Structure formats: C-alpha cells, structure tokens
Image (cartoon, rainbow, N blue to C red; front, side, top):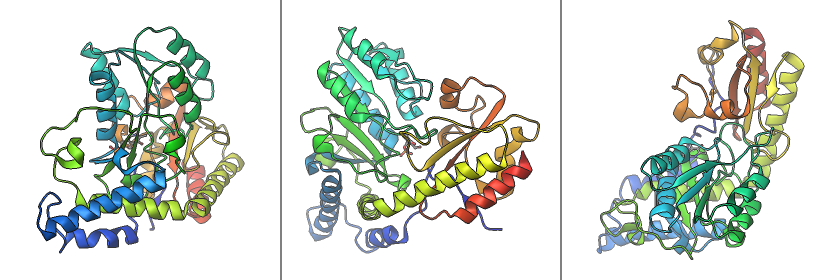
Length: 375
Ligand SMILES: Cc1ncc(COP(=O)(O)O)c(C=O)c1O
C-alpha cells in the first residue's frame, strides 16, 4: 500500500532539484571553505552565492544572513544573545511556542538571567495584542518579545508587523520563530520591524541539518558557538557546504512556485475540512483555520472514544503519517502543550494534518475514509 504523508510540518521530502544542486558539493567539490587554495575558494564562493540568493529572496542584506545547523540553534542563538548581549532582563513569550523557544526561555529564567511572562491568548489561539502592549507598557526592564510567526501545530499566524511596531514603540527586542513560514511565505525583511528570524531548510523540501538566522544589521551580538572564524566570526564550525547550497536552492524553488503551490495546498486544506465535516460527527478544528492561518496545517480534534484513543497508531498501521503535535514532542506522554493551552476539553483526541504540493485530493479522500472507519 502507498504511504500517505500528511506530516509536512514535521519535515518535507527533499526536492530532486535540490539534491542535484547539492551533489557536486557532496562529491568532487569537497574543499573546506576556509582553505585559501582553489578548492576552498570554490566552496567559499558557493556559500556566499547561497547567502546572496537567500538575502535577495527575503529582501535582506547578505551580511544579515547566517547559516546554522537548524532552526533550534538559530532560536537559541537569538534568545541567548538578546539576554546576554543586548541587555534584556525580561522575556515575554506565549505558551504556544515550539520547545526550541520555550525550553530556551525557561532555561534562562531558571538560571536567573531574565524574568519571564506569557502573553494572554484569545479564544481562537491568537496572541492578545492588547495584553502584549499592556505587559510592555508596565515593565521597566529591557524586554525580549519572542513569538512565532506560524504555529506548527495549529497554523495560527502572528501579526508580525503589529508585534514589531509594539516592540519598536516600547524599545523591546523582537525575535520571531519563522521556521514554518520561511519557504512558505513572502518575506520583506527590509520593511519588517524584527531583530531576529529563523528558518530551517527541511521544512520546505531542503535538506535536514541546515538553518538560517537573520540578524538585523543594527544588532550586534556575540557568537553562541565559539571556535573558528566561520560565518564572519558569528558561528564557528566548518560550514555545512552542501546543506547551505541546498537551503538556497530549496528557497529559490519554493519562492518560484509560491503562488501556485500555496493556492493548491490551501485548496487541499479546505477540501479536507469540508470532507471531515461531511463524514464525521463531533469534530472540531483548532485555531483559526479559515482566518489568519498557515495554509499547510490543519489541526483536528475528534471525540475521545476507546477507538479514537488509538487513532495515530491506527493511522500508522494504515500507512498514513500524521502527528499528535510537534514531531519533537510526539513521544511525550502529556500530549501537546499547544492543544492543552488552547483547548481544555480532555474528551478529545487531536491530530495535526499538514500538507505539501505533492499531496492530492485522492489522498484526502483516502484519509477521511479511513478516519470514518477508525472513529
Ligand atoms: C515552529 C518550529 N520552530 C522550530 C523548529 C525546530 O527546527 P529544527 O528542526 O530545524 O531544529 C520547528 C521544527 O520542528 C518548528 O516547527
């Protein structure tokens, strides 16, 4: 039986064109980018060409683009730097952040490096901007606001400009985890009031193990990883040459196909919502799926029964890949911290379906048909 992969927010398949672009750097072009002879210079050129391409697509300056090992490292770097280098002694975040953010801010808080507060949520899971402003207005401390652009479990989209303007008004530093939107959304960083954003190639048909950190040109921080002078002294360690080349190629392809792909994927999401409503009773969609929402993600709660409690397991048996929440926490017993924060109904089982351009309506029909049987 064909596998149906509806877990594209966890990771995506590598685009063959990306692999093709990477291959020379996995084989004959293996020089260390720091070496000064021709092999090294060839590798250095590939990295700097990738940086320029990424910067152009995001409307940033190449000097603002840093390659890392993953989105998690990028967020750790930005958040730690805001506290240790930029003088932030207070952090405002939300309970819906990815653990790359939540565990980092909790760690800094436990060490006594910064106080920590959580912004209120609206009933649909969006950030309450009035509460954010209230919190910013009522702290005398230099503050870091760290809020994700798109939630990886429910798809809610942040009003990044709105948050950025508030941060500007109150002199706060703004970091946004954009791992689910870089490669899925047009960015115009020159005209976006944000200090740090992050990205991860494996979320948009690029390779795993390569991330992006954008640091606004007006921000000066110290490195998070110490060692050699790679990434202009900002991120030591021999560069993931083929990964960086793959990152840029994947972003180029995603950008070229953005209009057609996003419309197609959004159509799939809406079709799945319609089919679920038509075929299953008592289901609920989490977040704001038809409002400010990422077109790739659909979070569905099903009534809890003896059968539905085993839902993910049974979907897996039938070769359907979907998650209970973030892939990084899917082994955890307590379930999703995001769903717990927005939905207090313990009599529901939640599944996240997330789509890409390779998915089809036939697959949606097959999954809905299987869900009908399993619930
Ligand atoms: C919103 C969000 N932030 C951060 C990450 C971590 O990214 P990476 O896998 O590149 O460390 C992920 C991916 O799981 C994510 O979905």
